[in-house]
Amino acid sequence: MSKIQQWLAPDRDRRNWRSSAKPALSVLLTTSLLVLMGVTPGITQERKPARTLTASGRGIVSIPTTLSQIRLTIEVSGKTPTAAQQEAAKRSTQVVNYLKSQQVEKLQTAGINLNPTYVYQTGTSPKITGYSATNSISFRVNNDRAGAILDAAVTNGATRIDGVNFVASEQAISNAQLQALKQATQDAQRQADAVLETLNLKRKEVIGIQINSASTPAPIPLAQESMRAKVADGNYTTPVVGGEQQVEAAVTLDIGY
Image 1 (cartoon, helix red, strand yellow):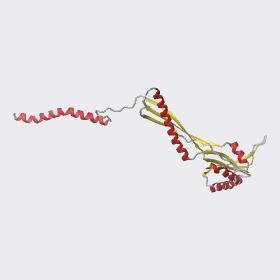
Image 2: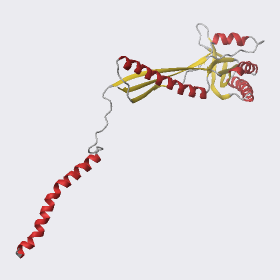
Image 3: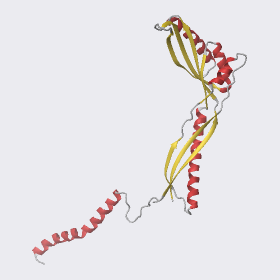
Image 4: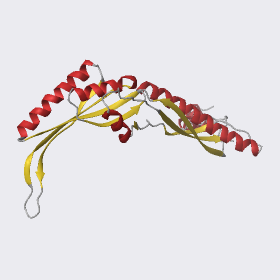
């Protein structure tokens, strides 16, 4: 081999190595790209079922209403705004102090109003004859204590009972919501199984879940006519008896088959 050939040999070997390395480099780059895309070479990805069945279930749980939400009003009249408001404040303080002594829950002022009172005569403009002041108070107490507290509040200055609503405790409602959700889920599964069994199909995994509702039930009002009739007779303790609230929930499942 001549000196020139010896000098060119290393360069020729480098060109041959580069040529042979190109396919391997191409494979390496392709593999890296697949990995970055989340695809593993040589492994077939598991696909979700192409067929799905949607089933909606419902759950209902009844719980006793053990609490009364009560709204009382102190209403007084006076010849001047100051006189009416001062008398309303005095009586309201007496009622509030009594309720505090009974350790009722969620005691708060629900409304304060002061309005003129008018007399209307034909052919003349309305004439102010005085002023009416009202202070409203709301609170919550166990049903078994509500009647006696209502009667004592009237004795201490309350002039009107504006409403009594029955509710369950927050803990009871929370527990009932969870139970209703379980019932709704089981109901949806039973419906799906009934359909698939009829069609000789098998249920696979759940691929979608939607909670449609698990709302807090509305308070149950006591009939105003019944309440007034019972409060009117001062010889008896007003009976207060709660009922039941229904907590509902709905769940939708997407099930593969």
